[in-house]
Length: 238
Image 1 (cartoon, rainbow, N blue to C red):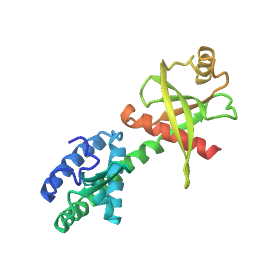
Image 2: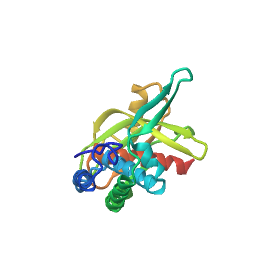
Image 3: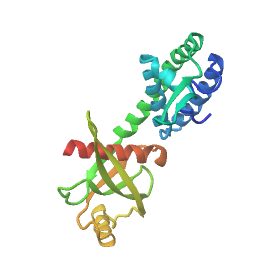
Image 4: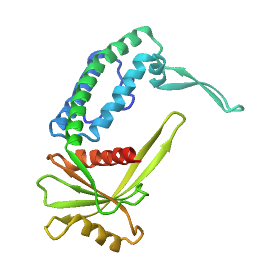
């Protein structure tokens, strides 16, 4: 099983052995990905389910909210619909709590493994500016150079800032442009100049080179970690 449904805990048969079977099959696939240093989307999915279980453990009402509902009565004049829970049973609740207690440490152990792989790759990334860096750095180019790979992948990036009532955070959108073979005559500064001539919408773009000193899957690990590393780099520099 590659993924778990969002409501895997309460969907279908509420039985410890059955849910254990689903869980172990899912975690086995995640572990295989991690063994191959493939972090995404497995790591994000794992974090989602782990946080969901933590919330359920802390607030049992969330368990009831996951159960499917059937309409018990409807007031069409007021456009109000009340729902009757299919399951509100102490025995079922005990079964779910047992599943949660079993699942949490296994999620935690695999998350720790994923975090170690992530930090290993991140710690082996080097970020450098290419050419003169403008004041506005939320849009520009990202060069990614892989260990033992004779080409540089070029992306255009754009940073977006999101704010909520409690926090402010950044996201990054990237668009792949092209790949260029490395050579002694093709410097990164020259590459930046050629890009400004080809894509005239950014006459003086911020440009960053990210070099990976380790071998890892590009799409599943290096690219997403490089994007997050760039966001962190720009956040610390601002």
